[in-house]
Length: 376
Ligand SMILES: [Zn+2]
Image 1 (cartoon, rainbow, N blue to C red):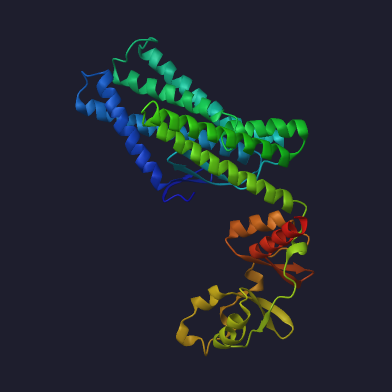
Image 2 (cartoon, rainbow, N blue to C red):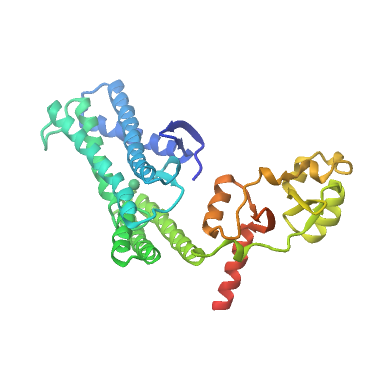
């Protein structure tokens, strides 16, 4: 999920909002205003709206603290966290790597619900301190705000503890199974399957609430279920992929016979004689018998069309020294992570200063496809 509005950085993690967040913020503010209006009809319109807006802002900060808790534990274990994005259904921390062990996974997962629970109890404590007693209707705006924030954060902590991936409870379940079985992939499969069951339950219960109970919140439940279903299924698929790629090296999948082009040729010659007839996406640029760099359709597109007949390939190529490189022994998963981080589609594979081949996503896909066909 890509953030469309960037808010800044906290502890090196960029914080952003997805468009869908604004819709939810608006809905929460509107429903809070309605709620405050009905519980305390003596409040003026200004007080009702101010309370509603302050409450949704505090809710936003509480959600952010939940995600920050996950991310800070990850960072403390040396795992890179790129961004936190808040969207319609809460927050997502873009944590680069999987937890290296069950213990780390456990603490990373549970940090969020613990934070939400603490925030919930703090708000209920403030409400109590200001004068609210359980069972009484909130008379003061401050009490109403604290009560709502207290309960919603406890609900959030409880909801997240449901044991189905990708909910935090699913990650905790995974950590426990991982600890018992010692197998990272098995634990992930079980947690993802539990997530699918939870998701189906949400969809069925939600639709029943909607059709039988005629309650619109049922649709919301079903929507959450559908989102969870999608997320648990894709994490299952990703686990299968990771299990297949684990212990694989770049050297097993790279393209060895990469097409080469002379650095002195013009872009027009390159397009007419190499790019179009071969359908290749990436070419090695040679100068004499030395590898000088890489050229892809991107670099050609970057040059003005009228200059193609005169501009040389080596003037637009990406020089070898500027490229991120891997060796044939680099683990395939690490190379894929590197491509995602650097936002490139291929990596030159170099060993002892010599170019051995090219590694790209399409080579990984082809490798998996052929393996799948052989094992069928
Ligand atoms: Zn969480």
